[in-house]
Image (cartoon, rainbow, N blue to C red):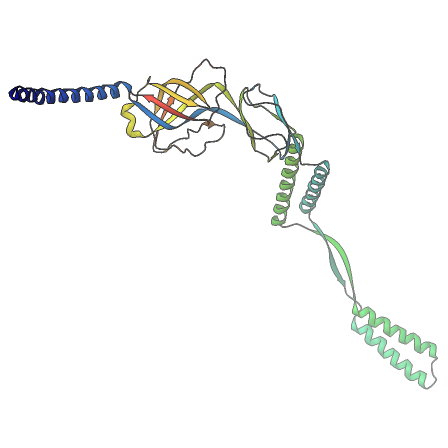
Length: 336
């Protein structure tokens, strides 16, 4: 009986170990096979991307009406907002007067500067004064002895005073025209240009009570609300083609060998579970161009994903909902 138990124990020890070893190999193979057939790359740095045009205001003021909602289709030239501007008619009049004043000043400088200039006219010679003095002295002596009348003496005295006044000369003034300096003319021209620009800007702002769509498309998102204060040049909405958007996933270059076109991808964005496939893989460059979620005309913001692969994934073509460029997404890319 004891021999039986020993044999059975030896049997189990021998073949049981082999069985456990075989099971371990099978388990490892199953894990390897599952990983090979079900491996996924999870990406948390991803977002909806597309091209859009930023619609900007031409004047500062208060938004009184928003006539296009998020997701609404609009046509080029359609009024999408109204703004109460801050430029009054009185301000326009004041700027017009200022321009007229600077123009008049420039014209006067170009014509020359009129000034008053002193002109000296010389008097009688000193010889006439000496003669009058000698005559006066002679008549005073004669008057003293009663040889001449007081009237004759007084006339001689008056002649002497007149001779002295004539000898002192006189100063008169005449208006002459002098050319203005080139620096003064240049400064006046600059002031005219400034006044013209200020008036043109004010007139533009006064007329900018309506904001129109520059292109046809879908309103992606609104940046303001009614009663919002806006500045000239501020973007209030984005307009783009909702049929021409995609998903961008930003992945470290070290994972490049695992990626290829056509790979299946599932993702969650704006509360929806969607799927697509890899349609493009953009390699990072030394100077990375922007791959921002919303590409607006005339702008190229700094790319926060520089140095990473940009993997573009298709979106469902048949959809009755709006996806907004810039919306964050969590992505799983199948590596099979």
